[in-house]
Image 1 (cartoon, helix red, strand yellow):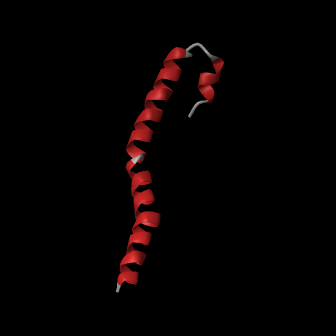
Image 2 (cartoon, rainbow, N blue to C red):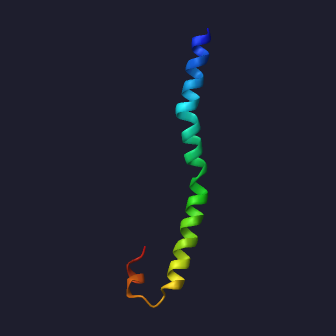
Image 3 (cartoon, rainbow, N blue to C red):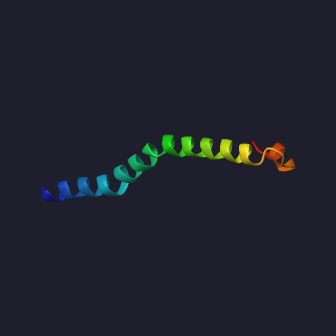
Length: 54
């Protein structure tokens, strides 16, 4: 019976915690990227390369 508990703990540590962490970082990463894109466009408004940005 203790082997089942060890397997469950291993699955949680190897699969669920990393996946949960990555999914929780989606919103901060998107906000950070949006803010950086706006700042770069404002800092380099007269550059001819701005038209190539998505």
